[in-house]
Figure 1 (cartoon, rainbow, N blue to C red):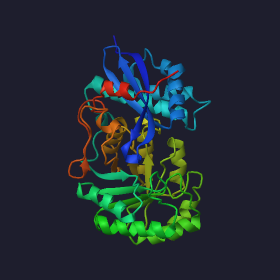
Figure 2 (cartoon, rainbow, N blue to C red; figure 1 turned 180 degrees about the vertical axis):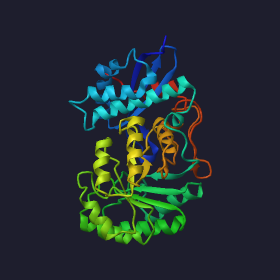
Figure 3 (cartoon, rainbow, N blue to C red; figure 1 turned 90 degrees about the vertical axis):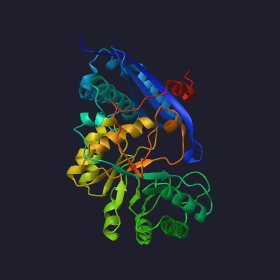
Figure 4 (tube, rainbow, N blue to C red; figure 1 turned 30 degrees about the horizontal axis):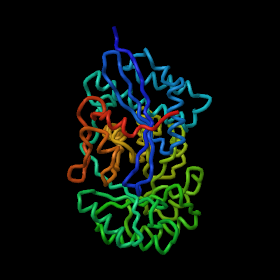
Length: 380
């Protein structure tokens, strides 16, 4: 008899993130067990408590039932089955995309384990030998020099790039004052040296007008940013061509808050950026992420996995990135944190500033189920 899907468990988790000023962050894990006892794990980055409970409820109250009794080796067909189910309430993304992401990643992990091969081989094989690692940070100090020293320490510790999010928690106050932001970028570049990569992520809480963005990008360009990210929110796609035309020497990254292939197709057809950001915990899993990555390659646009979550998302991102021709970097949290270091038996680490893809079957990680129980949210 063929192996079938026997059981699916859903775990909404909450934890404090040391890389984000100990802010509470939330994810949903899924555990899919096959009839022979093999287990696959998946995740979505639901981020907020209400989204996490909503995603868990959607999974528990019907979506997982679609997969029970099915052959897990038919994972791409199951991805389409899930997408067809949510046509009324999730065709454009949102909570349904989170739920599909968590299931799809677990299905790929399970398939790899059943077949005894790492996921990247199932995706077509290795295209990269190694990828440079970026310390993806939310500095919180009030003094520019202190923040610059912190970022320089990451480079000294072996990271090849640093990325800074503006508008974050703490006392950094980045994204508010033009003079302060320019001084910050200047000071960081001096501290990290000329060869280190440097990305500035404007983010969701900072709202720039097009003229202001052009002014800031022109000032930043002097300090050799690797790229400027998310200068405008997703609904202001028209601002990006104006920014690119005004500052052609500065690469632009965009797409972190998009959901699926249709969203990214519109982005790529608009020719608004040089690098897209994709998160498998949001973009309908490994299946969705690979579709988007291959689409971007046809437009000669790079791909940066936005994998600022748990080790599950990091592993999933690595497999897609290493099977892609257009992957650029891998983002990692530089400070030890529960979802990277407690959740798995062998945490993923850079070696000499580079990441390599896990070679064990499936995602190549082993979940510590006691940790899952430790951070599981109570459900009424």
